[in-house]
Image 1 (cartoon, rainbow, N blue to C red):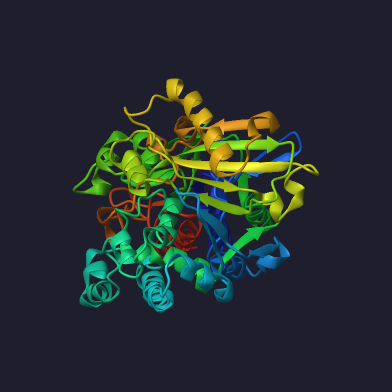
Image 2 (spheres, rainbow, N blue to C red):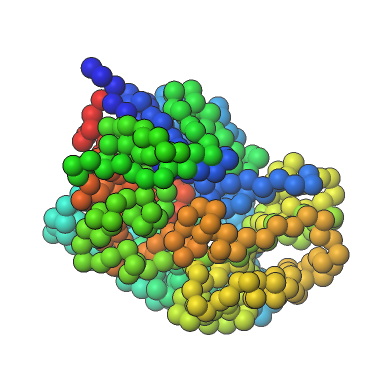
Length: 498
């Protein structure tokens, strides 16, 4: 038999994970990446002796990555060392109070009771409810590819949706278990991992705090999240996957309604199937003939998709250590609801933004020179739109974030300690990774864009064209994209064959 060939556009984690699976299944796989290194948004920044992850910093659901390596006949631990984190993080509230969040119940329960006396039985009920959402949601919805509407809207699925109340409002769902605003915030802010507002996200995302606390916990790959990317790159190479860097795909070649290859530097590269790991709206707008751009969304054009938030990033090398900071630190706005309202409803920069800091050197000292700190700062902000002019507002917002680090993070001397700095705004997310509207997390996860309603893994109008990444099924977030790679590789295996 002739070996079938798949071309992958983009070497983000979705493209790499799918390429590994396809190669292990017997396909010939070639990957074209426009940037100078693999990883996409999961990048690495180095300078003046400091090392930063540029994108995701939390590793959840480690079983997803272990299963990927096992599928290829390998063990993840032979490629990268995962270090468990405990406590998970400290949450700082707008009034100056804070709470340590830990998977250790003897450590966590006193913290909960300090803030809300008598909450323990309700906390256990919250975990029970979140566990149900996690197990049913993951098994029946996240890890399934709904190729036809009847697969999603069947009586069994509708019963499960009713049983888990997964489509309800996330913040209202959390509020049933906790009476204080502080605990409601502690167990709802996790939607920021996905660029979503807890006031608009589906209740199924209660699975996020559940997996942190009770299922698998938080992990840190030694060397940073990019070490996971390096492990995938090494495995792909061992399996014979060919990766071409600085090789931007100019067009997906379509003949008689079927994807037959890609055009790179004016040269047509033939393939039996094309898998796009580039952001899905960009693929339709820029890489396909005009006739193909609308049909796949049926009742909605790409222009009407709703997008996640973006992120304002600071990567700071500081000339001292800050022993009071944990590996992960969360700082919530004093007006929690207004913070999300500014981002998602008004499209403007919040006056008192919530933010997150990561100090990887607390776990891996090699990320900073001795006696210094590599500080990663992420501030959720609106995706690109008329509400923010980054050319004018970028520098004042940077100053505001530095003020917040001094006031809320106890880093009063931060300005005179900066020896390395790099900034990333939504404009950088757009131009560096072709992300529509500079939305760092892809398209949103409202009820109208999840499950069957989310863009599918295979084009409905072009044969043998497939998708993987944050803007297609099952959704955004590193573990979900990795699960999506498994689903799409399986589908290519069934429809294209060896």
